[in-house]
Structures are given as structure tokens and as C-alpha cells.
Length: 153
Image 1 (tube, rainbow, N blue to C red):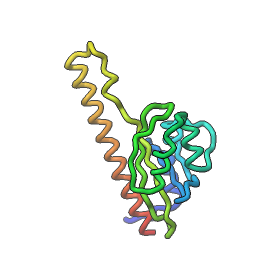
Image 2: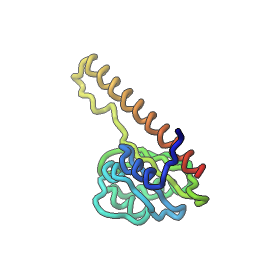
Image 3: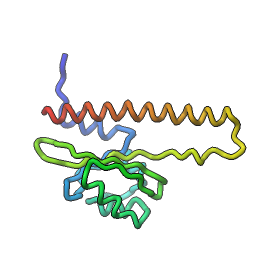
Image 4: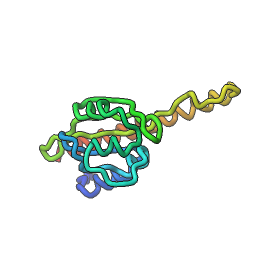
């Protein structure tokens, strides 16, 4: 039995993703930021546009990288107070209106392995990274399916 994805259901799904999502107008005005994005970027106050999002993320001097996200598709690693965050932007169409979707993921650095780590430690760390990557890919596929459904409505 096919069920229609209601607007409320769609937003509820976005609210509960572990990936950070922001939806912007093409001029950079922010329409929506989910809780995961706020957590990844460590943002504790409302932001109204991309410039405020950049300032609130804690690291200045990267405004040109942030601005490039307004010309999707783009992908950029950005330094924030939370560490390195990979941001991917893409153009989406919502009810015949072009918007920009930003997807935020924390970047894991292999430099976190201590010099005295054993081979088993290294293999365990690589296994953990592989599993996290697999989970991110599954979630990205779920998001893409939601976009296809929203484009069809």
C-alpha cells in the first residue's frame, strides 16, 4: 500500500536525522536548520542567513568558502569550533521553488590515533570509520529518496 509523504512527516524526518541539514533560499536566507546541524556546528542561537551561520560556527576567515555553497553543487571542508565539517550543497526544487540544501557531516581525522597504537587498535579504528561511512551512505540514500518523493508532489 502506497502512502503519501505529508509535509509534516517530511519535516519530522529531517528533524530526526543524525546528519545536519539546512535549507536556504538561493540568496542565503535560512528557512530551516535541523537539530543535528546545530549540534555539529555548535550553534546555540537562531540564525537567519548564511553569513550568520558562518559567524556562529566559531571560525572566521572562511567566508569565501561558505559563499561558494550558494552556487551548488559544491562541497567544502570548513573549520568550525567543533572541528572540520564537510558541507555539501545542492539545488533542490520544493513546490516549484529553487532552494539550496546544505548537508553537514563531521570529518573524522586519522591523526587521532596515538603513535603507540597497536595494529589491532588501527584495524579497530579503520573498522569504525568504515561502519560510520556505511551508515552515512545509507542515510544519504534515504535523503535522496525523500527528495525524489518531494519533487514528485
